[in-house]
Length: 265
Image: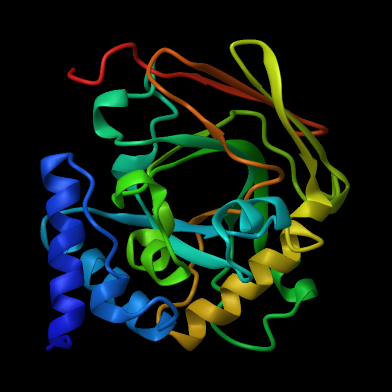
């Protein structure tokens, strides 16, 4: 049985998710920096979603860019869980009705061909475990009102995960070096964010190795077939209803999405 404060924090965030209304931060229940408690909240929310039929398809790494860390006032990465119903790649538009206060980030998505559960989980092992990579948009969202988050708040809130979009063009790691990519992100054809692979913990593969070790340490290692979002290659940008977002990532190509006009679909 989860600690009462963990249960209370999970219940608060679950209500925000179910009712579509942001809530107060949960740091009053678990503290601002108790990362173990925050992951316990995330795990409880994951358990509840799986009990309702949700299927885990991967993870997202967050707060890997110094620019994003500065935006949110934190100094270390985190991770969240990706569920199948968060993948809106095949949708004609991103469903704004499912989002509260969305922002968009351009990232690299890695798809694994091997488990990352044994061994040193160093960059060489992680590289060998990647099947292919594609350009991706992560649509981050917060159930915490006004994005008033500490590190514990965002970790508890599934690392502020929302939805994601994957491009169709696949490359293997023999075809490009993730750390050498450059990124430009446009909102309604206006350049609003720039970055590169080195902005993601120095190398997106280093971010993946960090996640592999952290996930194993928490008892839920990465598995073959899972999608892993690398973390942002540059600053996140607001994505209100009606926005057209396009990211160009060198080698990987373009990924784009249009946010539906109305929130009450």
